Each structure stands twice: as structure tokens, then as C-alpha cells.
Image (cartoon, rainbow, N blue to C red; front, side, top):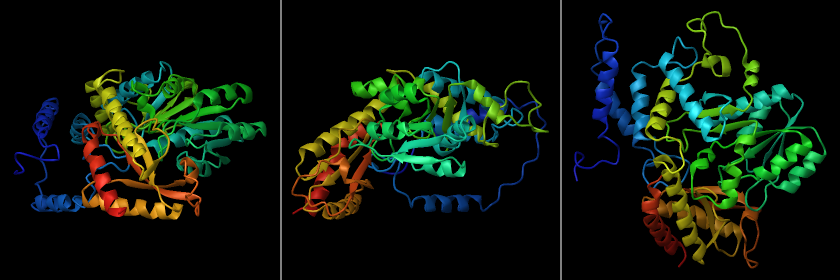
Length: 455
């Protein structure tokens, strides 16, 4: 096939982008044309060299990339983002991002509505790290001496952020399902001094869901704030094929004090696009500051007045708004079905691995992430096989990921020598809707590659 008849990268939508640029350009026809700088005659060669350099990447956009949390932006997001770049708005003050600021407010309102919040304070951020930082910053303002707790499977950003904010941080052990251990949590709460408990809805390693319902009960007794870090798993609120237990947890996320979700993960957006939401809008008082030159074009709330970040890309808001306009955040909709397809792919692959005696799987996946190990005489030997499978699979253009996790997450056979406390396991994030149609091919490559390792 030639490049005109087939391409792995989306080229067909470029005509739509050109039409959109012409449409946007027509809105400024009242301006006297300004002389444009001539195009540097080296631009094409530099851009082609850039394209050559970018070939040195894994094919993150393809279904055979089933490793890390990398999901291609939807064409609507990509095109709208590029469209906005012709203006390059800044969503700090309305002066710099008049239309895009309003689009951000509308897009964030829909995300908040997904969680059941009509009254809230929220905005987009550069990613989940910055969103979580704002959540813990507010928590620290409310209770400066309160200790932050998160599970040992929570994202490492929470301990790092706490250090930056000069907040005391402690880690709580997780159980064999990768969730915060309730007994360990309650024992720590009994000793007092806790200001915030971070509840992870979709850990980055295993996709595990912390027991929010039980933690909500503990809050009634011990009076701490609950911050839900659903940077990865938040959008699964819309999925219709979760387990009953997991689905019930999602129905109570609205009881948290703050929520983080990353549109640049399951929200089909380019990097970086995170979102922070606070249940109590009055926390906006902590952001109060004076600026002598930015907040005078409108009496409306400027997004920079409720954000720790100053300059922020308006293009990110435009991309998100366009995507949600095309794919509304509703159960049963096209967007929700994409989440369901990825989860179904994970369940199919997990079941194949579970039934194959060469492998030992961890718990049944709650979202779309699965981890598994080789059955071997020693934990160390299983780790070595995992590393070799990673390399063997890549030879057939299947790209997996590796993770070093506690052996307690796996039900190891009695004759497997536990010569190490952690084990290197295979990890697959099946977050693309297309993974459902490719899961058989993914399994076949795993099967063939493993057969070459175990003879």
C-alpha cells in the first residue's frame, strides 16, 4: 500500500482543520491586513527532520501499544487544539483568553456534573500533579497541622507534593487487591492528627479502587477531609460494565471534598490537561491575590483568580470543549462505550492469562489495567522471564510494560521460592477502545513469545 491509500496516522481530517481555520479567520476580516514575515525557506527541511526524529517512539497511538497509560487524543481534541494555536489564547485572565476561558468553564461544568456536583469550584490544570497539588494546598490551608494519608499504591506525587507544601505525609499499607488497607487506616486514625485522606480511584500501577464507602464511614467518626484522586479512573463513572461493588463506589464520589481527574488520560485530550474540583466554592478565598494589570477587562471571575498556575494554554480548554461537544459525558453515549470497550478488552485478556498455567494473574481488574507474572521456581526467575517477554513481544511489535510490585498482590504457589519481596510483572493498560478488536492478536503474540521463553 502507498501512503495515499493507507496511513496509521490520521491525515483525512486535515481538510476539516483547514476549513475551520478559514472560518475562524473570517471572524477577523474587519482588521487591516498586517504584513506577515516571510516563511523561512528552511522551515520544511527542519519540520521533516523533526518528523524523522519523532519516528524514534513507540507507536503509542496503535492498539499493539498495550503498555503505559498513553491514549491518543480524539481527532476533535487534536484539531480544536491546533485551531486554537493560530490564536494561542492564555486562560489566565479574560484579556488573554476571552472565548477559551468561557469554553473552559463550560467543559469543567460538564465534568463536575458527571460527578453529581452543581455547585463547586474548579478549573483545568497542566495535569494531575498540579491538580493534586492544589487539592492538598487547600487542605493544608484549612488544617495546616493535619497529616496527609495515602496508600502505598497511591501515586508518588502525593508524598512529593506534601514535601513541597511542608505538610506531614504518611503512607498506609495496601491490601492484596492493591487498595488502601482499612485496618491499617483505622489504626492510624485512632492515633489522631489526620487532616486529609487521599482516596485513589484507579491506581496507576494496577487500576485498584480504594474502599471509599468504608472511608466515608470513618470520616464521620474521625472528621478528616477526603480528597479523591481519580486522575486515571474518574471517567469510569460513566462505564456501564463495572462490577457492582466498584459501580457503587463511583456513585459516592460526590461525597468527597475535592476530586481530581485527568482529561489527558481517559478524556481523549493531548497532554497536559488535568482538572481539579472542590465541593465547597468558598475555598476560592485561599487563592485571593491582587494583580495590577490582568483582571480589568471584565467583572466576571477570571480563571487566574482560582488557580495556582498563572499562564495556562487556552488551547487545552478548546480541545476539551470540542471533544465533549462531540462526545457528551453521559452514560450509554459514545464516549462511555469507548471506556467500556477498553475494560472488556482487559477482562478478555485477563481471563486468557488466568486460564493459562504458564502465568499467575493478580486480582480481576476493576478498570482496564491488568498485571501478571510467569509461574517459576523462584520469584527472581519469574522477574527475569517478565523482562525477557517484554523484549520478545516487542520483536512482534507488541509493546507491554513492566512494573515492580509487592509479591503479596499475587497468590503464589507453595513451591515457588519467595527469594525477593517484590516481583517484576507484566502490565498492560488496555485503554484504547480499539483494544477490544485487537485483544486476540495481543494474546497470540504473548502466547507465541512466551512459548519461545518456556520450552
